[in-house]
Length: 137
Image (cartoon, rainbow, N blue to C red; front, top):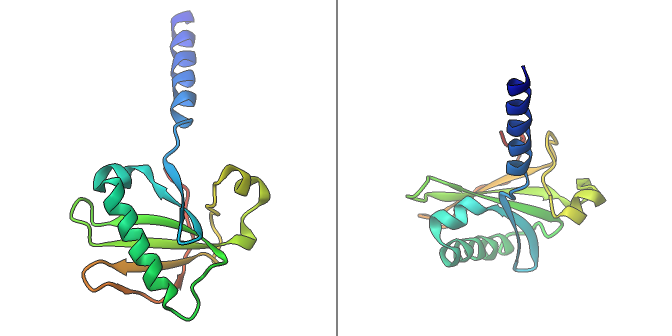
């Protein structure tokens, strides 16, 4: 019984340590604050991924509403053979002050979040659609 309790305590302690690793990186590109997955940076390389995001922001700035009052959450689509970037636009008004201080801009389950897809082949953006973010598993 003591061994079982010791094993459970060790597993619980290891699980807490693993949760402290940050999976998202804070970005500030073209005066727009946002977040991107660290795994995408490792997969594509820092320079390539940042150039894709800058290209996206340049195309978004050409639209009527450049969504400057939204935080961005960048996510790649297509794995190693990158097809595009999905960008979630989260209104700054719905992010709490506590989350802003932590640089954690994700708000789960709110339909005011918008989703935009940037196709790398055509260099075109889709029209923003309402989207609800779900927590990472």
